[in-house]
Image (cartoon, rainbow, N blue to C red; front, side, top):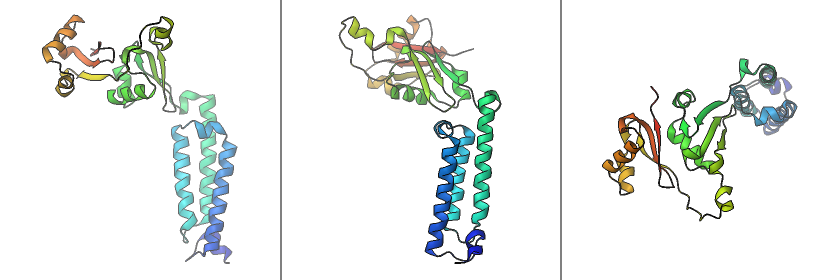
Length: 234
C-alpha cells in the first residue's frame, strides 16, 4: 500500500484504500456532527445547510477519486465545520448579526403582503402550508409566523379552536379547503364555474363587504361557504 498516494492522491486506488478513505471520512464527519450538538443538526440555518451539504460533496468526491488528496479533504472539512461552529456561537450571542428573524405572514386572517414578498412566498404556498397544519381557512388564523428554520408557526383564533364546537354540542361541519376566487383584482373563472357560481354573484358578495373586485388582493371561498376578503394595501 502506497501511503503517499493514499493521503495525497495518485493514479489509482485499490478497493481496500477506497474502503479505508470512506471509513476515515465517514467517522470524521460523524464525530464532528456529534460535537456540534443537536442545535446544529436540528436548526437548518443558512450556514449549517451550506456546511452539511458542501462537506457531504467534498467527502464523497475524495472517497472514490484517486487523484484527490485525502489530507486536503480532512483540512477542508475541519475548517468548514469550525467556521460553522463559530458562526453558530455568534448567532447564539448576537442573533441579528448572522441569523434571520421570524417573519409574520398573517395577522388576524389578513396576509401581510409585504412580508410574503420579502420571504418569497406565494399565496398558494401559504395556503398549502396552512392546510398541512390542518388550518383550512385564513379567517381562522390569528397569526402565522415563518420561523428562522423555515417552519410555519400558526396561532388560531380562540373561536376557531376545534374544541369549541364539541363543547357547545354543535353539529360538525365537513371540512374542506379554501378556494381562491379572486387574486390581485382578477376573478378566477375556472374555480368560480366549478362551484356553479356567477361573476355577478361574486361582485355582489364583495360589494356587501364594501369593496369592488379591482380592490381585492385575495378572496377565498371557505369551507363554511363564507367569502374571506383581503384588500390591496395602498
